[in-house]
Image (cartoon, rainbow, N blue to C red; front, side):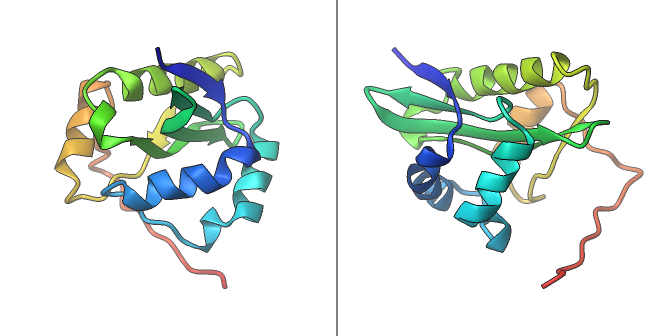
Length: 139
């Protein structure tokens, strides 16, 4: 039976293994142990993992800026896809935001990641056609 838990920095090494092998997830310097630890401290109780027989099989990194929530690194081990793990992780993340009176949630999906786009649309997320994502590397 899958067990859903709050993400802790002690999960970091296992998370990196999962994230690195999940298509559509790209890691950067922003995903260093120090950065993830700081993110979890700023957003306590908002990110979740799933374990099956002790093995980490799913994750969602979630937090908010006080106005809207952002989801990152939703991942489920390939052999567990289609079993509702991702949906349960999403529900936990959304419930954590609702408890903080956050009523809007955003995420980034690589435009060629059709399976992720399908998952998010099925979950009620829609593309924001009137916006363009822009970024600048500050290092």
